[in-house]
Image (cartoon, rainbow, N blue to C red; front, side, top):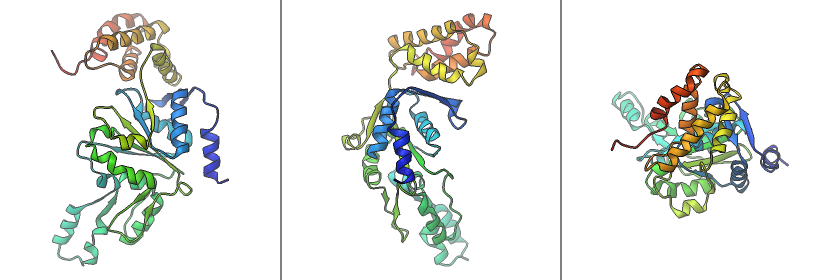
Length: 311
């Protein structure tokens, strides 16, 4: 059994259990993995499918990719999707402006103005086929390096629902086959899980429906905030590595969690979540204990009670 297969077996087929851990490469230092998280990670990893993580903002969808990478000691390549993001831009890009600049110098040979010399590997190329980057560097005589030096990669395609529906459909073939077609080079770009294992995590705030063809090819993790116990567990994961947060009393943490859920129950548009919960606790931790109950009355008006627009 290869080292990659052994790592897969050890890390993703063990008995699921709640995990809270701390690593410096995770934003804010901590992440709380539940059975639901671990089950979804196992399903995606072992079936070699992207993990589509859906849910409201602030539930840790993007951070899950960093948590997975932290457990595996892999690197993260993050592609942030915008309304105008194209599949070509995620795969590779050609710097036409730089090429035009060199052409205007009139001192460059036709060979030096070849399109491939101005080819920039996109996030997907960097993540799934970093072993081909040295071939590109040799072909264009350039300095093109892998995005990190880790043994594997978690590719995070963040907020895919911002893009037109044509983007996820266009990604299907690449994510299925691990092959990237580029007309400007003479060598294949193909992922190899044996040489460089990777996992794809895609997030969606569900602002736009994703194509069913894309849904069919993903493992799904739907994140919801159902009870205040979830918030308390998240707080416990963070406070273990934050001295200021650890100073907060159980009562004040419970008050903030209660108010979060009270607002979620009555909110007409924007529902506060884990971001508002942790922001409020961090702000409260800066005050003396005897001041916190009074300060909470003010802070919650500015950090928790939010609307998309004024009435």
